[in-house]
Image 1 (cartoon, rainbow over the protein chains, first blue to last red):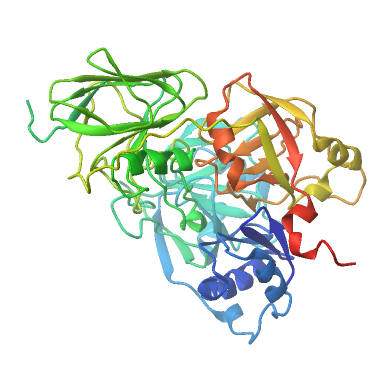
Image 2 (cartoon, rainbow over the protein chains, first blue to last red):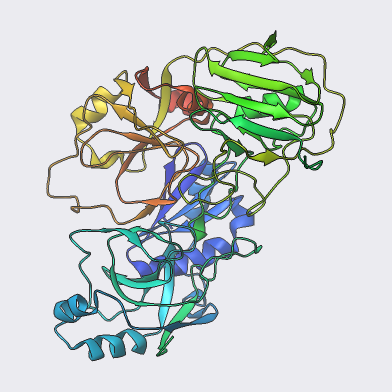
Length: 206
Length: 301
């Protein structure tokens, strides 16, 4: 496993794609204590180990590690979270145009996939969920909204996500949910963490 | 009058927040580390009043803070040197000061530097999010910045404060960088000019990032690079370079991921320089050489 140094206390493990990130993240999170890592943070093509007492040793150690030592982590699955969703977003028509299908087909397609949280970022509890079929990437809005409501179900690039709190945002909004993505008073405040599996299920009415 | 209230904010100045050592360990959930920007100053203020070094204290910004005491307490000020007054009487900076119930305490404005730390014996009580009382200006976690009329409660003093006085540390205007992880995205000439380059601190700097204004850091133009960097995790002190070429040093409230290449990372020892730099101050970048990084290997080859 190849890693490069990041400052005095961190290393960055490079991966070819999101699938490799998922495998590396599962492996490194499981061995965080062995490496002395305070943080194990996945993103699109990299996994960061931060808070390392001896990053030079970690780079050398990782170079002797296989990416997927027993092939098991690939099949490891996180908990399945269901997101009850009203498909009432203002950008449904735009996504239908980009996907060249009807809005009913967009809603059906979005629900038909079991997604995996690849990584979090942008805001606490904002999960980049992967799993959309290739070819269904979504272009961001040319004109980002100054305020996207909390609970907005959204698409951008190869990802779908849910805004945990109101914030500016350029993702295309296709629906909304009332489920709490972030519970500040909890010891485990984030509903979604990397590795979680997600399904969106349509609810109607209020 | 509420007897549970120990102090009242009369004037929070430009920006006063509660800060401790932050909430590291949750970046994979998108949670910034937050915490005091000038960590050695926070630790010092707490030591001066007998607290654990990471107890929650006030972080002020340039103009200081005015407080009304509802009960007597001890406090100490560190970080940016500033005037300290109790009911209009001058008190020492950098040492424990006692003040009685009803007193008005004026901290600042800062004489030099930017952020002062005010620690109270017993620490500031209040809301904890993921184990920290820190205000995070990026994500909104923790208490909001203080406003006039806010009421604060203090814990029970831990120990008799030591009878010592701290001296202001003078911070040289130099940031030492370790190159990488994406130095290879930049032109050879850019990297060559980085050591010794001088930048002015931009006015839009805040707890999220220190904006540097000066020579643009140019990316390589050859075909070998992708147009954009896939979203990558970010560390404290990362020097991120947006397309404008004007670098931003990520401070405690920085986003956990980012989409622009990081040319280098500021050494931890120089983060207080970033915390205390005022807009308009000039800072010089220095590469932390490989020889300095690994002194044990100097004789080899």
